[in-house]
Image (cartoon, rainbow, N blue to C red; front, side, top):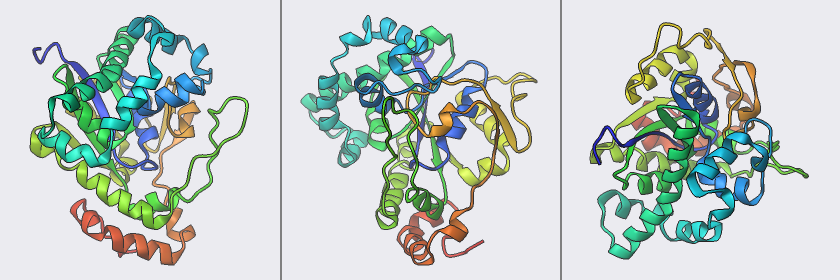
Length: 317
């Protein structure tokens, strides 16, 4: 398949609570872009649990996603969800990332990767056709999924590696956050201890730094830089994916706020339900609300990787 025929997909990689939902919402406001949210969670949260789309409707009642399902599979009822999870358990594992990166696996595993990623490719292609967009954005962030997707020849896959100060991320994962997408009940986003999150932050951000050395187009963006100058960050992302921005393409963005329209993000942070004006800020509550002992522990555990990405984890300012 030629480069001009490959489906352009921007994959947001990183650790959750790094600001990816806001970044994706803003990228989704650019002309020619269709942002899908965290597609990795669609099969359980949307198809199985019928949680709400970013537009506010249950997945089964969202016209956009029903049109995507019809085009991709002839209707979502034709999707073998159990088979999808069976394949996911086999191939979508962080322990598989070295083999996926270097291609050191057998034919049986290769067939499983191809079948597993077929689900995503079909969704991406159908979403492109239904929306009329030039570029699809998937903010799944899930590291092994990206390594699986990069094995496909029919995707023009680009990685936007979003990274945030490890202490800010670890603190955010300790907070209690309600999940408004749940229909007919109440649920909360799960929490992770600071020590475990520090290790996850280091491992996944290290792994996401590797694909560029294997030829995958990659751009690293620090959340703090994005929050300080969102205009420059969006223009950098647009240039990275080859979007030609007109003179009024960023009219939805002011110096420190953005006007968001309705989204169809299938999973992600509760911010995906917000429309209208949203303030863009660093959110440094961790500096005063995160226990000092936990801050020091996270700083120590993440220090080597933090330094690579330009952070000074032992400085408080």
